[in-house]
Length: 287
Length: 328
Image 1 (tube, rainbow over the protein chains, first blue to last red):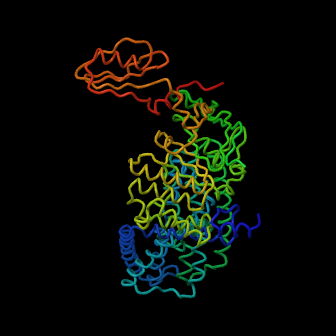
Image 2: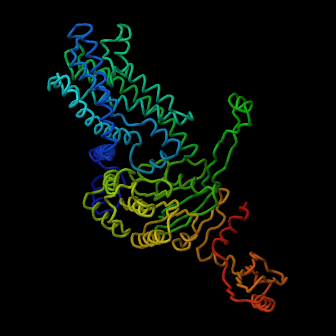
Image 3: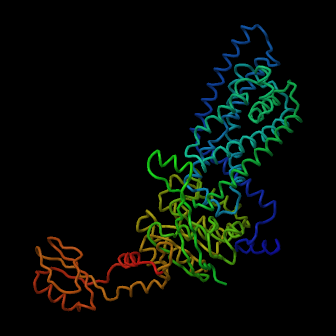
């Protein structure tokens, strides 16, 4: 049937016979992302509590770094002033705080068989979760950044970065969130084969925090570790966007985007393969 | 064109069998031993558009497996099926736009958000036209009487309220075939009635084909005009619902309320269902023993306060069908 006829049918309130235009399909996932955003803001108290916890962490780190800077007697460490360092932490911590518990959610959907029921709906399971996760992360990340930022402004002063960096930051943040989604999604899908995915989740989270540069920018790592970590997907999720926003380093946006795009392709191919193999188990063995 | 056609549909699961204990675990790791478990065997069935069919059977009979194949979630191992002219497992996404499903034990609404948010999202998911969506939504909100809790988060709704919203959500895109899996499970009498009435009305007005599974005899009796019973993966009964009653046409149930412990006269074709200090319940095969004689005998030997003669409950009839051997 032509899309025109389908549109007429839809207008008359009959169900569509075929998927609609690409625009409609994209809008579908935007609507899902909005639901994610709304879900993340549904519980105001929990939302606030997370922010309080974030402020506490940032306060501790600010005190620690202040001590480090004063004992070494330098104003700049590896290109970071105290203010740079603290604002770098605001960004990486906000990203970490924004991550929903995606892996355990997927794990639960695989085990309970809910995944099978989503196949009755006209959307892609992966894109659905991608959109939902981005929506949720955006809500939480924004809140964390605003609260955390306001808190550190009172201690070390306003953000050191130029507004001009915002453009590359947003692109790097989005690509990084995509890599993070693909990796976490894959970890959750392991539930098709193993009884308990939480050890994998734990390892993945720790690796992200350590190698991703959540507490320390990569510049502070030992040279060998720094060069390895610089190529790994974890640093593309946390370090790269944060470093690009703080600015002043020798990290080139173009280089970051290329590495990120490569990881998106690789992690995307892997998670699609895992999902297909897993979905086959659903369709062959039952939900 | 028929709405749903199944021809020789079969599904066999392969499950790993493992001997107990550590030794068994090791053996199964090295050389896994598989056993074939037939879940659905050679099921043929045709459902016409606008029909309301109850698809029932004991637990593990193959109902859900069949529904999963019809919605495209599972691949069959044999036979064919077509839903609205589409092959579900090959054309799952195209079919998804035209069918709806409610699974009584799985919520499809966003738990933390009000139902209205879920409705709006589904309108996008099913790519509905904005005005058509609003008209349809208002229609369903009125039909299910859910206007009062459209903006209350789902987690704060009672089960009955939530189920009505679930059904409305599944009907927003005007599906032509609706799969209902235990839609009234755990609901109170009033909520069940609202849901049954609305399903019946929608089926009549919109000619929606309804494929219903339920363990609730009331659902079957009040909704379905046709009953298909599946057991051990095979269809063992497929008739009009009214036909069920004829199955036990020659059986009556006598209920006596007594003034003290009574006695049951020994008669052929009479089966004691219950005998307490104050009452007797009997089942009589009227082909062997005329009901008149049994009642007369009972009144003769007992001090009867009250007596009633009824048909056996539908539940018992269905139980008898379940116990029948599957046809070979």
